[in-house]
Every structure is written in C-alpha cells, then in structure tokens.
Image (cartoon, rainbow, N blue to C red; front, side, top):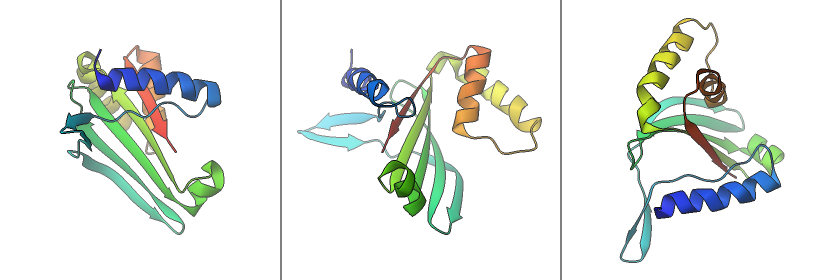
Length: 138
C-alpha cells in the first residue's frame, strides 16, 4: 500500500466517526528530502465569487491516473457553518471508470437545465455503479 492510500484509510475511519458529512482528505503527496509536496497540476473548471467568499472546482489526474475533482469553498459563510473559513471536498473517480464517468457526465450535462455539483456527480456514480472515493477537509 502506498502512503496516500494508508493516509486515506486512516482519515476515512476518523471522519466517518466524527460526521456523516466529512470524509478524509485525499491529496497526491510526494516525499522529497523529508518535505511533502502536493501536486499542483489542477485545471480550474468553475469559479464563482460571492459577497462573503468564493467557490471553485478544479480537475486533475492523480498519481494513479484517477480523475480527481476538487471543490473549494472559502469565506465567512463557510466559517459560520463549519467553524473554519475554508472547506475542501474531493471526488476521485477510479482510473478504469473515467471513460464511463465522462459519458455519464456529458449525458447529465446535456439533459439538465441546472448546473450540477460534485455531490450530484457522486450520486450519479452511485446510480451507474462507477467506482470512486470522496474526501473532505475543513
């Protein structure tokens, strides 16, 4: 097992005990001379500014070629709800299910009048049997 997978498992158990809405943090990390570096190859997919914060969604391929979608919420509204002014949520689609996820996402997108969220995509994955993991960090 690699370090990222072990960290995800430990944080997952901890978060499930603490809250149904919070799950472990997933980040691609590399140990280089004792320093941890997070991969920064994300493409911004969505961004919206609000009076008291912002919401951004990014996409990238992880170290295992999984598709990692990251949602970041910042601001005082987030702090009022979570007790911290930033909230991160990750949806990680397993490598073998990325093509199926892409087709289902396009189908949903072309047949929806509303924009959809990572939570909507997670629900779609549940319905279509697409393998994924989720993580979050406050």
